[in-house]
Length: 178
Image 1 (cartoon, one colour):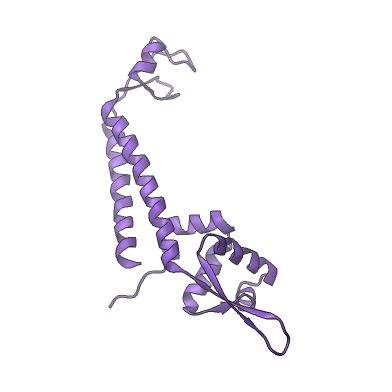
Image 2 (cartoon, helix red, strand yellow):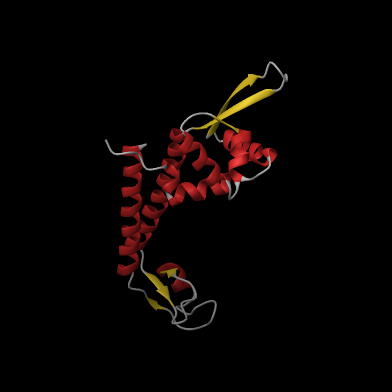
């Protein structure tokens, strides 16, 4: 059986983790992925050369989103609690699937606009306007005053369709492997 690719190999996963908990969140998740069992915040701090408080802050941000979970045990000698953290790959996958579905929906909407409207633009390419808006401006660009002409949106439509196709492939890989 082929070994699963780490979820952090997906660029969108890296972006999501970075947005949630900062640049070092990606490395933190990778450490936990490689360990494949619970790891203490002290171990993570040592491997990342960070302060334990910084690691805990990141872990708590990920915990808030349901990505990181912990087990708490009291150290009988010191009386302090030890926290063992794990990363929930499945939760990252769920969040990524939500993001992919949102992106696909937005692109499908854009595709619908490209298919159903004629867009106009000036030679300076200031901004694209649908026919109705261009007509209101009497086919003169509101930004630069140049005349606006209809756009051939077949190329843009193909680009949108290609992006949708690629996102659907990634989405399918996520669903099948994670």
